[in-house]
Amino acid sequence: MAHALRDKAAISGIGETAYTRGTTKSGLALQLEASLKAIEDAGLSPRDIDGLIPYFPGGGIAEDFIANLGLPDVALSLFVPMGGATCVAAVQSAAMAVATGVCKHVLISVGRTGYSGARVSTRLQQFPQFALAAEFEAPIGMFAPAQLYAQGARRHMELYGTTARHFAEVAVVTRQHAILNGNVVMNKPLTVEEHHASRMIADPFRLFDCSLESDGGAAIVVSAAERARDLRKPLVSIMGVAEGHPESPASIAQRPDLLEFGLVKAAKRGYAMAGVGPKDIDVAEIYDCFTFTVLRQLEILGFCKTGEGGPFVMDGRIGLGGELPINTHGGLLSQGHVVGLNHVIELTRQLRREAGKAQVKDAELGLVTGYGDMGDGSLAILRRAA
Amino acid sequence: MSTAPAAAPERPMPTPTRESQPYWDGLREGKLMLQHCAACGKVRHYPRPVCPHCFSMESEFKAAPLGGTLHTWTVCHHPFNFFFKAQSPFIVALVDMDAGVRINAPLRGVAESDLKIGQKLTLAFEPVTQETTLPYFTS
Image (cartoon, rainbow over all chains, first blue to last red; front, side, top):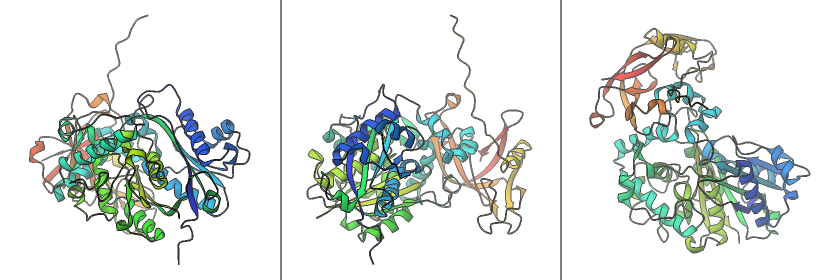
């Protein structure tokens, strides 16, 4: 029997601000600007929005949206505090809300001043999910995701022979895709040599293994599938969606297997709900806070076996025209860091065939992941409806 | 308007909780005090109120042996907090303690090129203030 939520909801609208390093706008203003674009893209009025999932913490709360957009009757206000896994996990929450009739149109939004506002080392200390890291690891010098995730990457290298060359391939291919997009922070080509020469941040992560600290806003509208069919754009249906939480979710150090992300659980449920497998996927937008994180997620998603993520990304496989094009917009590594909502937006564009020079030919079915906090995971499988 | 010299950056300090206080008190006394379930005896770290194995809320802290083996590591180059700038780069070792939990702490006296998963390391103690002692590893 088909999953009760399968194909019951759709991504009906998408919107983005310019991605920049430097802005005078607030996180809230960026979020609202992107939201207005997403609502317009769907062919809706702001007054039609009756569910809100803003990114937490930072940027705005339901009250701000009601006041700014004059929303007459909001039926649902949620936070999904899963760091980088938030946006895709929020798609699950939104799909549940519209499929059950609690809401008609749910707005998911992110606005960040990651470059012009608080930087990563101070920002994260305020997250409740980082409380254990703040107590036990910050005093010894471990603050930032780059440091906390580096130990897992190092272990993967030691166990499986994964190399900096593999990491570089992800960075270089992602940059090539970013250049095709236009609305990106990093618009100059990157070579493997430049990657290897970039300064070490937290071994094994060099500067170009790390995602950007940037400013920008992004938003999507999730609507019930039968409503979305009558809206402006081609229907992009939510075929499968899931979130997953790893063991020892707030401490990587205490997790029995450092490389066992929440995505292990989410992928199993997400694929089952969609009734498809990795071989069916035409294009994948993989959460790329770090190059290594992409390799490991490709393994977890079943595109290759554990330990083979490094070799898998080589030889053009993840580029446009390759077997599995990934991060066709430039991702967090090269486009901008809006907590991966730009990944959901890009997949929607691909399936609408609106991706311009980065269009994957005949894309019918795609996958998007989120990865965040200390290893939470989320997955959505979207398809272009007939 | 006078310009005061910038204050020296300070080390971020732990804020012990009601659950974790015995662990930090232990470090100050040169001991690794780990939380054990009073009902089923299993060890857990970081400290928390409920045993995830048997759901007992009774626990006791016991001194644990200081040996362990290297699980993985990172080398911190970018300090992220200016306090750590002077000592960068520094190795942070994640160690499988013989006591059955992991400890993440700086590793001193071992070259980066000599690091190998499984090598034996020993926990040591460094008082950083009157109140707080932090752990580090030696070979």
